[in-house]
Image 1 (cartoon, rainbow, N blue to C red):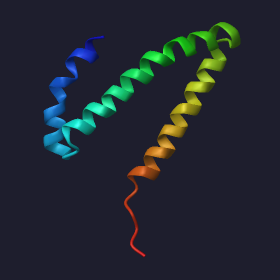
Image 2: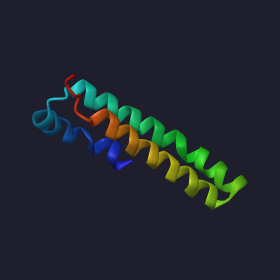
Image 3: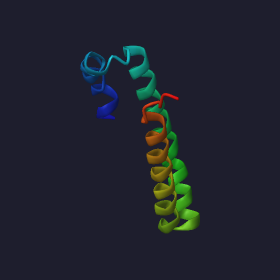
Length: 80
């Protein structure tokens, strides 16, 4: 909960350094908070019904997909 209140302290420095725009930073953080909040009950259900191994497997898959998508998105566009 502390992150939800303190994140506004970092918006202006992030915008000054990366020039993403305050609205885009706020939107990204809002999406993060919503997904973080709603994934906790899902992880709990997976742990109850499938065991902790299923939770760890799902987290590993999501982390792998995030890494691959970040690499694709952040890769500079090549000139043809």
